[in-house]
Image (cartoon, rainbow, N blue to C red):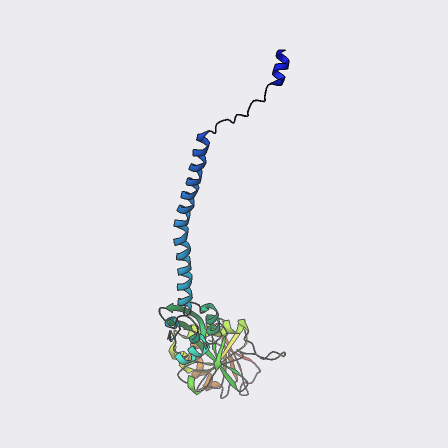
Length: 289
């Protein structure tokens, strides 16, 4: 009976479990925490983004500002090149912004001048570029056929020699420049070294240097020179130039008394001097010192 009664009883109403308020408070707290974090991030991000935008705007303004347009070029270190000639080498730089100008490229242009051994370009705010050049120093006047050229100690052909360079008191050197069959010209390094050694040695004896009118380095192991008041070529070899020239000066009066005409004097053997010329009875005659 109890079983049937239980079966006939009305179904018990569903009873919901009461909600746990602690979960609701945690959810609200999380949302508040997220809002605070987002606001904090936004508060820091906005000024940074704004600052970056301001910097970009200022950078654009600076790069396009007429205030920084190059208006002045200052040239220093030049002696033989005029300031105008140096400015011509950097033609076009005045149209550029000081901060954007490619100074390395313009330096290469300045170095294209044979007169320039080195160059340094610098920016000076607000609109100036300074160019400091180091010029090459001519060592000799090299002769090639009928043409004369200024050549430095490294064998660089600086310029064709002309009236504008009359201030240079330099020896005329034959055989320093050669014309290859392929065209153009070149300066052999061994000939440059011989000429430089001779000229350096003579720098300590200006009295001898002033007497020399011509130099020939066609043979890179034998420098030949000629005095202005003499017709004989003096062969000096590749060393002891000053000593050998002095030996010739000491013997010159004696040689002129014995031989009326001499084509060359070979001084390379120090203790013996060899001569050649129409007045010399043998093709080569030795004269003991």
